[in-house]
Length: 465
RNA sequence: GGCCCCGUGGCAGAGUGGUUAUGCAAAGGACUGCAAAUCCUUGUACAUCGGUUCGAUACCGGUCGGGGCCUCCA
Image (cartoon, rainbow, N blue to C red; front, top):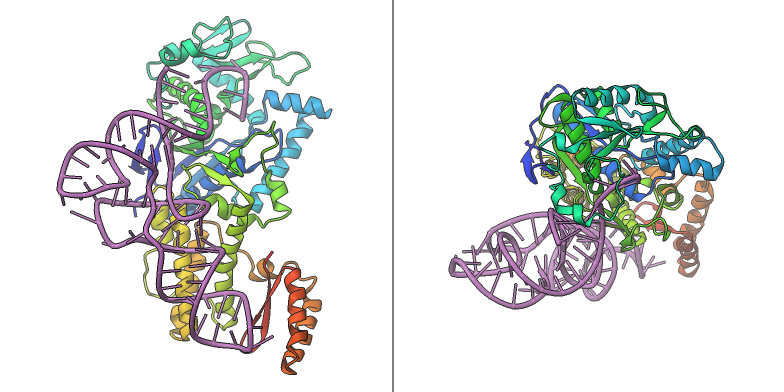
């Protein structure tokens, strides 16, 4: 099956051809670690996690290299650590730990390499020196600046050209720039600021260099896919592309550029100053990570996504239904078993069409319905086992439905005994036709968010809140 | 001013030049002591105005509405 992806560089959907099928290489821009991850950080993490799962499925687990960086050199970090009166190292260590924990909780697998900018200062200095030597960068006022006029292709990714916006530029430009579009490769730091010694004095790298240096170091001078949020197209990715292609003399840095759409929160623009944002950490205290993941995948990655509590509720409901189907089949004595019947993997085919995750989710519902119909009709044992297998197996591509059923429906097990005792009491009342008492007990369960299901043989329970 | 995206039934959200997903919610039915779960059925949606076409929600153009980016800001 051919994977098709929308390439921002070409502005169209294209069939993906890898440079090397034995080593498919992907780089995605990660977070700047000065604050807790929010849903806007989580979207690219989840989306590209699914892309990488699909690539590993197609090319083989060992034949994909996935790199996402962590930006731990940044003015925001400097400022935040001052505010909190802690060292930058303490701040970034804390935030990185939280980030990794939160991403794991929403099912994001660890990338193969997760380099930190501070670990690559040497390569960044070398990279900058290389650009100076090749005449693409110049030194002025203790800064090293990239000269955008040294390459004819500047603007090819964002389709943004100097002539178009220079007159309307709202931002004051550094007076010593040769051209307003030139950007910083290295800038001086004050003595009390984070910095490193370099041929141009004590200072720190500009924002864009880190990705060029780390991508080249880990993936080579050109690689397959470069991803990130749509806001990164300009200037970040445009500048990375300019630097890398100039430094190495290849026309391009990555063959395919993919960008995920923006996230709004409860219908409004996500804004830190207006306190309109959800951190993953907060959400996890109320909702399963899988519901967060499900919601993020229920909209196509290039579309804008509105992240809302009601959306989370529906995501949870849908997961309850899917897990409920597996649970029902298991309670009927079936186990997942792969049959010899070949079936088109509908999740994979949906993902191959530019990562159509919403369509992939409907494939899950389709199988669930087939299982339920088969269970209702009590026929075809092997078919039920086969469908169960497919539901669970296909879901792996999306990173869903891999949780333990008991954990999903019944929590940590602390209440099990008490609940079972109450159910026994209720069933005794039912047997005695004391339905008023039986319903009273069920109402109590309902108030606790526990749903009872009276089966033919026994009564089972699920937490639904 | 420049570049770009979006507007689908009560809600979420795919897709397609003609047969009109999927999920949630709602209504009816089967089942059940009552429920729940599940299955079945129902609702004829594609901002607006033109154009192309035998035929457009889908292609093109205008309009209206919403959103993003435009240089040290991630």
